Image 1 (cartoon, one colour):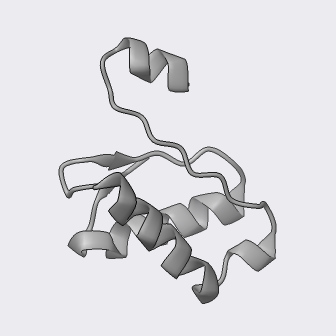
Image 2 (cartoon, one colour):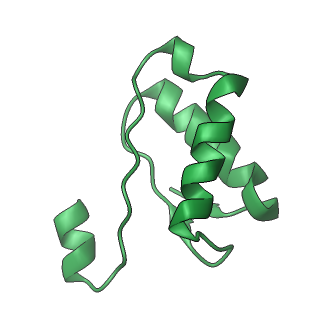
Image 3 (cartoon, helix red, strand yellow):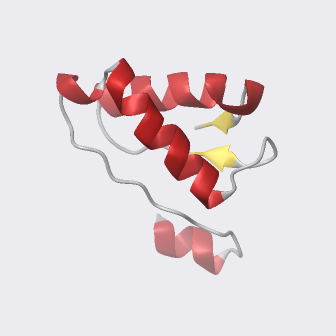
Length: 73
């Protein structure tokens, strides 16, 4: 997925999180928000999550709350 997006001209940044229910926690949010700030993510960017339910749930929550909402796949 990363290679394909880069080949299409997108600027791709990766963030890896541990799978499991422990990751779906309010204590994970500061790490994720800080990473997005370091990436200089804007409201016109897109968050794509790949993984299971925990990662999808966390990604959806982060996308809906970061900068008043960022597009999410």
